[in-house]
Amino acid sequence: MKVQLLVSEWCAPCRSAEEVWQEIARKKAISFEVLDVGQPEGRAVVARLGVRTVPSTVIDGLLQHLGVPTPGEAMTLVSAASDRADDGDASHYVGLTLTATSAWFIASSVPYLVAAGAALVFGGGIAGDAPWRGAALHAFGLGFAGLFTFGLGEHLLPRFTGSPIRGGKFAWSQFWLAHAGTLMLMAGLTLGLRSAAVAGGALAWLAFALFAWRLAPVLLASRELSPAAFRD
Image (cartoon, rainbow, N blue to C red; front, side, top):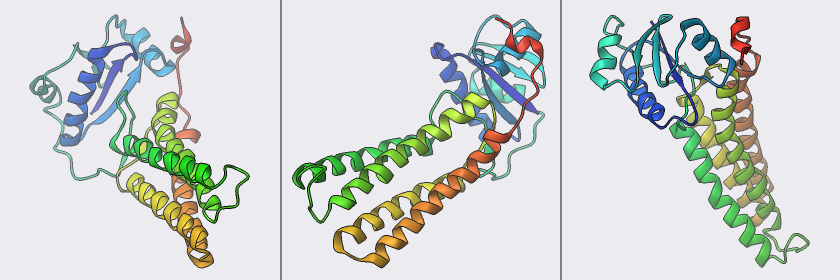
């Protein structure tokens, strides 16, 4: 059973509707997709069904509900679907709301920015020669820029392409590899422990490799759109 929720960035109730359907999707074996009516995929459905309001719920190609459904109403609409097994690591469509991993990637990047800025200032700035200068530069490059990119990338790219992304343990493994690698690299550079720095760099590389593996299906997937998808 395929459930498509039509939403728009400016629609406040759409986030409430998404929360309801995300909860249902964790319980029932449905394919849940959030379609922005400003994107080609969303416009294709709107043109085919003549939808004039958001949020709207489309189930197996048919318009089934307008507005924000209650949990009970949503569950009734998909009552024929079987209960979901534990497959939290499967690919999922990204909606308006940040997933837990996206939010944690972005939030946890900020302390690295603070640490990098403070270390560079107290170390004499960019041109300084303090022993922690290399660690500070990696705190900014890997810790801040890397984690921030991970968070935005796993949220925005699936939304722009309309393709699902692998999540669950894959996303969390990437999160912990990135943190462990960055901290180990920083410690190794600061203390002059080459082996620790190399090991940290390897862990950070694994985080980037895992991110690339998660994004590959998103960027390579092709979706067939009808000409109606590109109408104004």
